[in-house]
Image: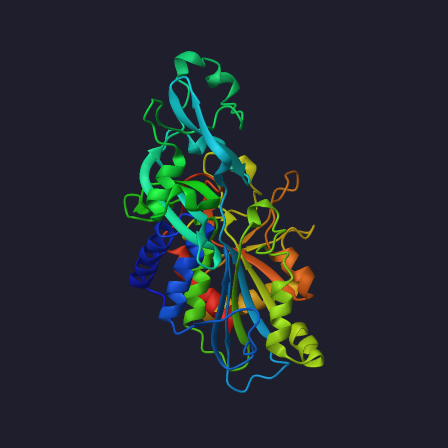
Amino acid sequence: MASDRTSHAAHAQGLLRFIDASPSPFHAVATSLEMLRAADFVETDFGATSHGSPGRHVIARDGALIAWVVPEGATSSTPFRIVGAHTDSPNLRLKPDPDANTFGYRRLGVEVYGGVLLNSWLDRDLGLSGRIAVRGARGVEQVLITVDEPILRVPQLAIHLDREISTTGLLLNKQQHLAPIFGLAGPNSSDIWHIVASAAGVSTDDIIGADLMLHDTQPSALIGIDHEFISAPRLDNQLSCHASLTALSGASNTETIAMVTLFDHEEVGSVSATGAATHSLPQLLSSISGDAAGHAQALSDSLFVSADNAHATHPNYPERHEPAHHIALNAGPVLKHNANQRYTTDAMTEGAFRLAAERAGVSTQAFVNRTDMGCGSTIGPTVSASLGMRALDVGCAQLAMHSCRELAGTNDPWDMTLLLAELLS
């Protein structure tokens, strides 16, 4: 992999396409599978007996995916190099019975998923996406749906009716103020399930379950006077998903087993069957190794890389950042530190990171929170604890994290891909 201006731009455009095709975690997995099939990965399942066989393998379930490359000559003690990211992002999700007609409007009941910047969802043209469960010949079947049209909107209250907003700020009640409208109520009005059924090509009577969420319908774009920025939804953390899959697709390891794990539910704690706290990953690694003694040696020599975006220093709020650690867009991947183990980086894994960056030829940055402010976390501590594996936390710098629409640097995703390719080798 080479690093030049053309590579940065081409990779950024590929990222935009990946994000626009992936409005939900389930779509992100489907888009990832397309990438991996094109790179000769073969789908398998957790019950297969070929996990440790040489070749390219992938397992997908719901909003999670694990892909790995076993080299010829691998043994039970061959170490792993694993990059982990997550497919979910904070958003608004439909309640089980969402239709609510009020004051002549057709409205939807929504739940807040994760740490949403609530105001960022106001006055945007929103679509609907996710999956439904339908009656099938063999029982319950999954159908992905995307209504990528501006059918929903959460209108903000006019300033004339909220004069205090300039002094007290915008205060939103999650139950009362975030319900989107999608039409005017009338005797012949269709409910939301008719819209969903039409998008899925099924009857409303066939829908027996749903995981549906709102998404911004404005396409992702390169912006700024010199196209230096990426403006897109879900950069946290689909940017890392795309970078890690690109790096894995080009992997040609001979002495390690390269792996990418994309988990769901990171934004709500990772405790689920498809989250980072699942036992599926430890069980899969054991199956790949095959021998208990060799597997223990493999884990001790392995490395887990938690790839999740980092906070760039905000030019309008510099006081919210550690003064000695300025983080900039387009200045290279960010190694994240926290003494209280909210991030997993330590001296040894920092060393591995720096050597990999030197080989990749990319600049790097170091992030740490202000001491008097709390710190977010990642899947790093959860996976490292469950595997007993050394780990580090790294990500691309971004602004507006957890907004409906986020901002990153155009050059950083390709540099992150080059770094992850080295860390996987």
